[in-house]
Image (tube, rainbow, N blue to C red):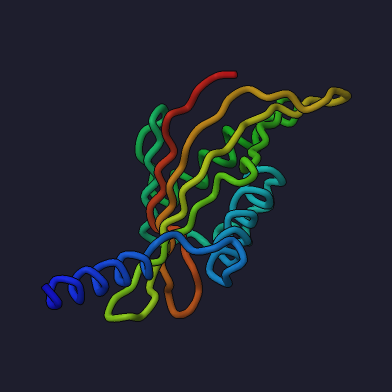
Length: 162
């Protein structure tokens, strides 16, 4: 009986230590800051150099409507589809409170993180208020590459018009 209790305590401790991190943790803040660079600077402001620095060379982007893209195709699609029309510019906003970050360890060493969340999409037109057009869920696998975080795998799915 005593042995079973010890196993249960070890099991619960292990499970809890790899759960979602708190919003005030350094890992959470780092990943959310990187999300902002990719989406606020890259997607919303079309400022690509900072965004490109955070994309893994072997990026795989899976989109439920636009298919699979590697890093080169992802950047070209951003240039053409997101930043190519200044009259109807898409804008992405992270839904407050939707982000969850899960650390990934190898022999107790942090090597990556999974980011889950929900984002909304808007259209920005000259002389008009932003208006919402849709929403979707996303998951990003972030990996440490020589101490720099890189987006390696991205899933963008459950797109819905609004």
